[in-house]
Length: 115
Image (tube, rainbow, N blue to C red; front, side):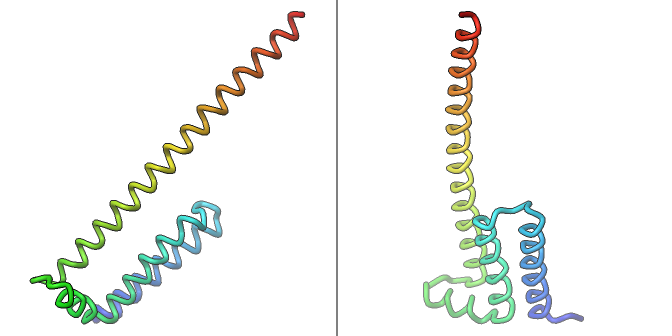
């Protein structure tokens, strides 16, 4: 049987390798890769040192420390989703403005061609 520490370390390295591959293939922007590298690092650190979860849970007064991992993970996912929505809204606004500018330029071009 493979120890859980080794499994977590391998999983973290696999995530980091996948992120590097996606960056090299220009499928993932480096700005977004920082989030995923932090996930890979967290998987490795918490997998290799599981007592950190127990220590942090007792420090924060959590009755069942392993649930702290899930709560923090859900919080991080919610923040990531919020940031993605903000970025998506910014891109939509930029696209709408570009479409409006293009329409104005096309109207001006048509106007000049009619004259």
